Length: 376
Image 1 (cartoon, rainbow, N blue to C red):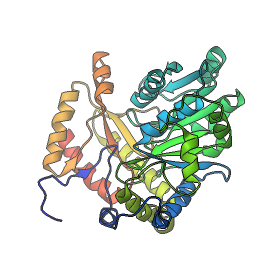
Image 2 (image 1 turned 120 degrees about the vertical axis):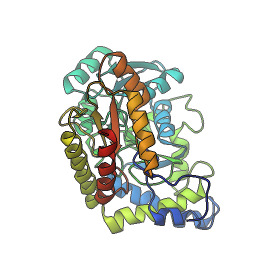
Image 3 (image 1 turned 180 degrees about the horizontal axis):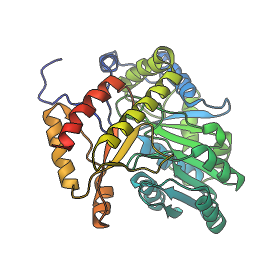
Image 4 (image 1 turned 90 degrees about the vertical axis):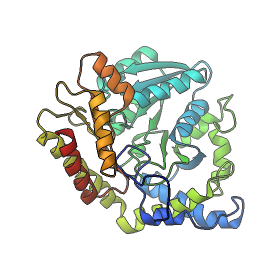
């Protein structure tokens, strides 16, 4: 590796994530004109491979947003929630709260229904909220990065659609690590490059239904970058709305080719399930530690664990520095979640990210060192 003033740590955080050497190397490939024929050589396969990973219905469309998953999530709100309509946000953690705050910041009539940290959205609670608030759009999180909860998106989307609302989904930290269930009735599924796809940050990704496209035609005040219709005009030519990160485009071309045609999508999803079980076994073997997320709703890409009584968030941050000395970047937990838990007299949590191109061998080595650091 070239000389650098920066540490080359092995990342076991929830994003950015570990990059394969081949992905790093693709960052040195030639730049290109984003309105030139060279663009399609990269982005046509990118659009096609994203659709394969998403198991995208044939009549859905794909958008690449410049920015992050948050960019796609804000575009969903701006393009699909009309003036006077209610958008219902089902929040199971920090990123569900963030999406609600985006709706508020954009002047939308937004209702938040929250669930205790570690708990998933229940069908009963959803049905009650639909009956009370009669939303036109419902926003939910597929995989809550802050708490390690994975919601039953397929079941929830079916209920939302039966109520006549559009379903929009934050799949930022799970896409590329597990099935999307878009075909169950998700109208806009938002994700990003820097987590389970094993790429640098730089693109938000949106998969949109015909119903979402039709709705966007009747919503005003969508802005420029927040208007999915403007993006779709360019996406029809495998382009982005404005100048993309060409380096990331090259890396994305290489990585999606690897996911689809070398590792294989089913094998990739199975590897994430294997690593989830490894993380569960690790936590359950540590005296006094417990799995945090609700049983049956534990994420395939990030595991959360509650520490023993008497161990604090400050202790977890000290463990982070111990792990840094061993060449790892450890995640001591989402700060606001842990501050809230401690204020309630509850045990803080830490996160083990096992997403993207982390392998079971890499995870095993990390957990061996982490176990010693946590119980030292």
